[in-house]
Amino acid sequence: MRLGYSAWGMPMLPVDEQIRIVAETGFQGIELICIQRSTTDLDRLDGAERRRIRSLLDAAGLELPALHASVNPIDPDAEVAARNLDRLRRSIDLAADLAGPTGPPAVVVMGYGRPESYEVDRERLAAVFSSLAEHGERRGVTLALELHVGQAIDRPERALWLLERVGHPRFQLNLDTSHLAVMGYSIAESVRPLVAHAVHTHVKDQRGRVPDFEFLIPGDGEYDYVTYLRELAAGGYRGFITGEISLMVQRRPGYDPAAAAQQTYRTLRRAFAAAGLPLD
Image (cartoon, rainbow, N blue to C red; front, side, top):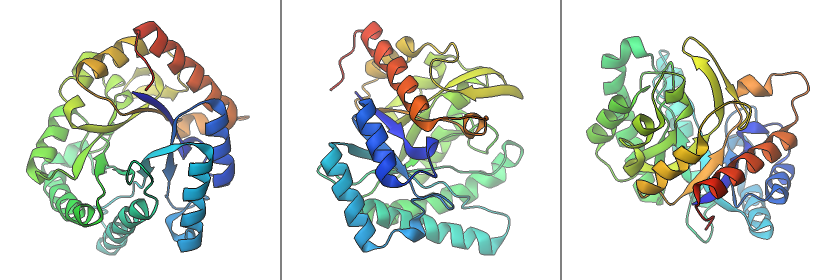
């Protein structure tokens, strides 16, 4: 396994600065983002900028395991949903354009919807992600669904249902166990049913239980990263462990994106050492 960091925690920094911070901190990879109102908004990246970013990554020696592209593909407004679906298709194209020596990054997506409308939302999501997986197949790009507290796909059995319903090798998981932790799931209950489908991960810390919870910088809570890493290794996962900083943290006065990245790195390096696991 390898250590990565998500630019989700520094969305307004120039991409040059994002890459510099992540590389200098010691991470082996970076997850870029292409969401609206970020410095790397999909619509800001013409062909020349995409080639420049690829060159920056190569010069820094960073892999690009994932591209975060989440936008609601089943918005209640049909016109908005159509625009968002088109944006996700173009995000897949962006991932193909940013491909490096190890291939294109996985595109991290979420299902949105609501837990209370799961039975209806899941059918719409299956249709949407089936279409996107076909586009991913044409571009050589895999989608990585993140289950998320408060959304329709919020627990393991729901993620597994959607994976089976879509039934496409280009539709897999971004395993972020923090959302399950705040719902009361143990690490084993979070990892074991899902790890075989994981092509990428997010890790952060957390405190409390739904509805009274908060996400934290790794190391600020009590999450057992040693057990987490051992569970992933036992399940055969060999990809990136990617630190992510929640918007809850970013909204704090005085938030320092570089300091958050450094703390995340120290926390996860200690966990790898304590787990007796090498960094590839």
